[in-house]
Length: 428
Image (cartoon, rainbow, N blue to C red; front, top):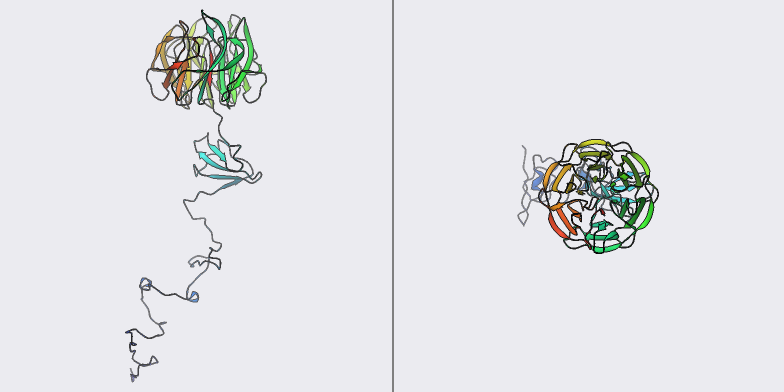
């Protein structure tokens, strides 16, 4: 090994002597091996000693502005990125990132965030100007309306009264305004904040369509005309399009369907034909399907058959199944998944329901408070609670309600401003 020099220095062939603080003096450690990095708890390592860069196996260091250099993030997970597109999203744009997904329109500069990721019915909130949200139009709403009707003596006759109530809150109806003309046995539908009254009967049938803005009490305004002057029609809506089905023209039941675009006043356009000519059927449905249940046919016979249509697509109706009873003049209400009918001629207290997306026969739901017919004709629901109002015999002012998702008997909700039957009804 040769001579060893003991002189306290750190040159070649010398023993290392701890300094006055018991520490090893500065030495060259370039040949030291098998030292675990975890043992270095303080100090710095010169960058020249590290293998830095932005390629495989390199250590990434921040730049002079304490920012990461350009690196690929393709393997990162759990980060919801914005979608960039030349157009707006649609209600059928189902984002893989779900709620919170951002969408940037590179043409208009508008930015949207998904706030409801229900497949086929997504809601995209515009977070730019906070207007122009992309959302499915609703055929239901917070407020229920009844329109027109007939009251016996005293103070009897055809009525132009429009009542309203808040569906989520039990209580009596409040005066909303008046129809252009009094009527009875009208149909009704709603969408986009409008309530629409369809034809009816006064001294004779009328083809008048009239409308109100549901959140703003006031009198009805002329909308246009149906293809036929009918009484006892039914109206279904997907929130943007409304379809009238059947009714009675003179003494003849009709199979004609016509439609309107609810946001645009004008005359109705031919849609197609019902499977069965009928009057006094009642509507249920959702933003896709509209159903016309039961009624009276051309042989003046009460029927239990159910027809359905795809509201967005013109064409003839298709058989859906049967109600549990053969009746006409029922009350009705719907949720996204379930449609419910109650009461009707011959006077009954039966409530039954169907699953709107699945064809088949109706199932027993429960009972009305009392057996009534000629109830408020239209779908009066907030999507959770359904209400059915008025009727006969005798003239009724009772509003009844159910929880659509839960089978059971109807419960008292409150009263109309005036007892009457043969009303049109909707919600929005």
